[in-house]
Each structure stands twice: as C-alpha cells, then as structure tokens.
Amino acid sequence: MAEPTTIDAGAGPVALRTSPLAHLAERMRAAAVTGARGVALTERPFVTMVNLRVDPGSDAAVRIGKALGAPLPLQCGHTTASGPHTLAWLGPDEWLVLSHADATTVAGELREALAADPGSVVDVSANRTTLELSGPAARQVLEKGCPLDLHPRAFGPGRAVSTTVGPVAVLLWQVDDTPAYRLFPRSSFADYLARWLIDAMTEYRGPDVP
Image (cartoon, rainbow, N blue to C red; front, side, top):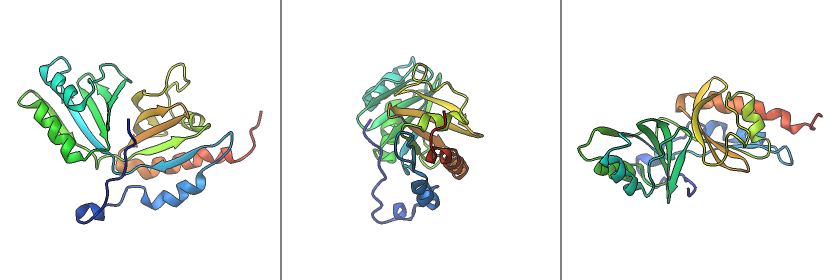
C-alpha cells in the first residue's frame, strides 16, 4: 500500500492531537542501530483505522470490496491492498482497514457500501497507534518476545496476525523483506511496548558473538 502519513494538522482540533509516543520520539531515534545488525524503531501516528464486520459471503461484502478496490481477505494472516488501503483479516467476519485516506471519508464510504445489511463500521483510529520496526535485526528483536514463527518460510511480506510482543497484544504486519514490521498496539499500551522494544534493541549495538 502507499505509505500512511500523518494527516496535515492545519487548524482546529487536529492541531491539538499528540501521538501516544511523542514523548519517546528522541529515545527511539537514539536507540537506532546501523550496519549489518541494524534495527530502527519509529512511530507512524494518526493512521486511519476502521474496524469492519460483515458476512464475508454477503452482497454487502462484495460492495465493500468494490468500494475499497480490493476483496476482503478470507484467511488468517492474509491481507489485500489497493491504493491507500490495506485490509487485514482479524476473524471470520472481521477486518481492520488501514489507510492514509481521511478516516471520516473511509468510514462513510464503507457504511454506504454496507447499507442496511447486518454488520458494523467503526472508526477506531484513536484506539491504536503504529510502531515500525525495521532493519536486518528486526526479526531477531521481535523473536525475543513474540511466540510466532517469524522465519521467512512461515511469515513474510503481506502477512498480518494478532499476537503478542512481550506481554502486549498487537496486530503484527510484515510490510516488506527488509524486514520491516508494523505493530499496532492499543494506545494505552504503546509506551510499554516501545520501551520493551528499545530495551530489546540494545544488544545489537555490540559485536556479534558467535
């Protein structure tokens, strides 16, 4: 998908927003490691996120897929993407729509496509924030506290699953084979997760021990 970006603050209520991890921005920058064991952590705040529930076999699901430009993924771990939108499977009848388009616009288009059929469309953009962990050592950092098999044979670009990292529940999405991962924790747990990841990155500043 195209890179989600922070919505232009401009004037009004948007200008008053503070991301859940703004206070850790400098610590995350300072924790970055370069070189063959490199790893970096950044926050990507204010990504549009819309929770969608609908019967995947319904006409409404087809209309929603057309509105988004991509069909709803139907298997655990799968994602689909089109233009500014990525759709991540959360359950048999539940998805998270990630987008860099305006949240009100995305939610409105989805509600129009759902029409009077059973289901729900809820803007949950303020419920989570987005952390990106990237670099050659990113997978090793995650493996310190994630129970998933993250080896490329089992998990690769385009995969997104609900899991835990340390004690924190997240949606984990591998964006590319850098590797780069996006983690979507609840905003109230973001501080803990960011500090956990910063600590897990520390050893990669030193030499590789055979």
